[in-house]
Amino acid sequence: MTDHTPLQQPVAPPAAPPRNGLGTAGFVVGLVGLVLSPIPIAGVGAWPLVVLGLMLSAVGVARARAGKATNRGLAIAGVVVSVLGLVVSVVWAVVIGKIVSDVNDQATQHHTITYEVTGDAKVADIDYSTFDEHTILVTTETSAPVPWTKTVEAKGFLEGAQFAATAGPDGGSITCRVVFTCF
Image 1 (cartoon, rainbow, N blue to C red):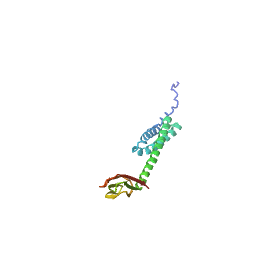
Image 2: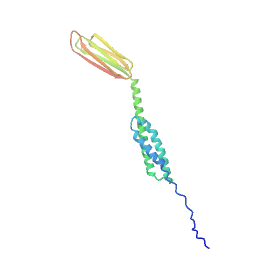
Image 3: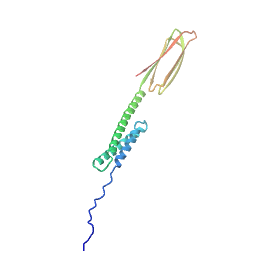
């Protein structure tokens, strides 16, 4: 009697499914970081996203090269959007650093304000005010001889100055001038 049992062929194990997760995640995280990076407040949180997106996308590209993933194009797109987001984040950091530096420079700046009254009037009633970061200087001088000049110092942010003059009781014309000097 013959055995009619079919010969069994060895069965190959099923192919491992592609490992596309990191490349896809890198693209999504990098894209979110790129979208957030130019937004002033949200952009601060964008740089960690684009760095993470770059790392995940790079692993995704490596997996695609090794034949373990099938989304090489998406992983490369993740690298590109992550690098763009990183560039935008770095540019924002430089711009914000420059603004902070400029504000600090202004905060330590000294100002000289010169108030001047000229004209053919013999005397004038003068009111002037200076507002800086520490001081509000409000002064009134009655019957001040014309020409008249007063120089005051201010430090930091100069909030403003007010100046008014009126010719004295004998009349005449007057001209007022304010000169700001920063150093």
